Image (cartoon, rainbow, N blue to C red; front, side, top):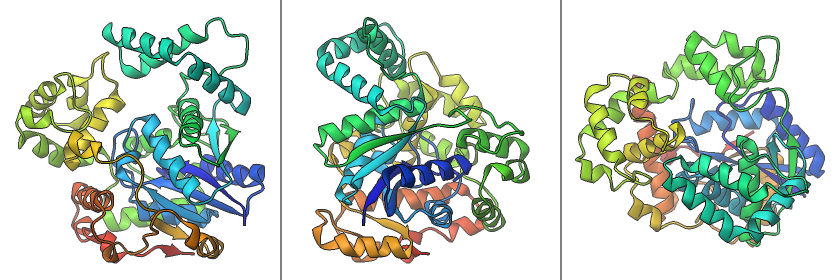
Amino acid sequence: MRATGIVVEYNPFHNGHLYHFQQSRLKTKSDIVIAVMSGNFLQRGEPALVDKWTRTKMALAAGVDIVIELPYVFATAQASDFAKGAIYLLDALKCTSFCFGSEEGSLNAFHHTYDLLSTKKADYNAAISNLIKQGISYPKALNEAYKLISAHSTIPLVDLSKPNNILGYHYIEAAHNLQAAIKPETIQRVVSNYHDDVKTNETIASATGIRKALFEEQALAPVQHFLPNTSYNELVTWKEHQQAFGSWEQFWPLLRFTILRHSKAQLATFSEVTEGMENAIWNAAHKCETFVEFMHSIKSKRFTWTRIQRMLTHIYTGFTREQLKQFNLPTYIRPLGMSKNGQAYLQSIKKDLQLPLISRVAASKGNDMLELDIKVTNLYYLGLQTTTSQKLIGNDYRTIPIIR
């Protein structure tokens, strides 16, 4: 069986995701589609809307064959490390290809961009360093340095100011750096851009726009036509049982408590907390009653909203810079769910896997990366702060992969 891989968050699984998944299968002529999916905390540094098991059900109901968890270490990392973890897992799972959505839509432009930045790596890094010294954010420094390096190029290049293009570039970079056998493909992103608000006359919207509409309206009905029925029904079920969706506003009382129980010096030990941000975070937590108020009080040109959220994620989960140094690549493959075809595919490659395949975490001992995933999953349920969510603490030990 021929397998292709996709890297996802499905927060939540919407019609645009359905299009990407279906086109990925068609474009790569694959029998199996494997999704490497972030767990309960995401790359933009925020809790997932619903837990990883609910999002796995959404994916399987839409036709995805296998859902694999991307460990917390990579799921909450900057784009290059996020991509490295995901591509490493897909390559380990014997995928012949991976297919990502992009604003660009042309694979040649990505290859040209990779070749250019590889050739001019020293100049590129020097430009980034100089720009950061001027006090601008890291993502903006990357983009400005890229403009300088590519200014006189006559070949088609990727616009690296677009979020999906950025991730696409890092997927290709990761495949090169890992010397992976897996080959890239890309699908043009349709209708809605990453940060766009929902448009009522469309049936495709970004996950960001859907979440924004959901929280503003405090109802599911306004976003229903952007979702497959199976995804919508899962959200309805989640709301009925958990009474809350994941967000930093929902988590704020516990996040605030976590910040205040540490000294400034202790806050500075957590991953990504640098350049005195521990002072701003500690001071703001004393006076801000809501998460949005807190964020606006500490955001600066130097640090993006996303970068600050990643700092807060690591503070909340207790993930330190010293812990980060222990991890380089994923140390296991953990399936969250699979179709019957997906189950047959895993069985066919099981003996050739170079990483342990972990279906029951209770049977796996001594894996620090897995132990971290279990810990942050429990903290996710705690952060929801509902009676029913508290009962889900320890759920990783009780839950086996979903078979559909």
